[in-house]
Length: 225
Image (cartoon, rainbow, N blue to C red):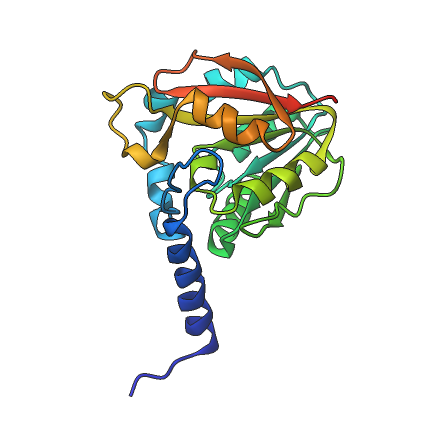
């Protein structure tokens, strides 16, 4: 009989939690949550084609991130965007690299250690809480992540609390309005869907930038009442 270790039980339990996340719909928009990409698919995050398909450096140029800023990469995965953010903010800045999957964070830890990047702090989050310190960041960035959140309302509330006054929440999402973009429908969002869902949690859609070949850049600020 195969011996079941505590590690394998935890791994199975985590896989079941992720599987359970795929069944919900958003109570405001009715949008169906996309399945979460597990750590086993991390190679896809590092694919060579991503530079042409997503133009990540163009996206970061649009955001005009200053040196010394405190930023958060929410759903950082293996760190494809994290390392770019680390260069943008410089040694005086801070990047919080957040993910719910410990395997992803371990990949990221090895990456920043290899590349001798010293301004990244790893944060183990949960499906409903980023675990970022209150009023700690100028910018929160989710690249192809928001559509996978199974508890988006709770997560947005946590992210709002983590923003400094005047801070920004930015979503990069594949355009659902364009059927020619070769991504499954549940992994795309329309501007209207994002606006409806995010503004319901105390944000305002301040800007929509369409500089990228396949994705919306959706910039939200905290609503002032």
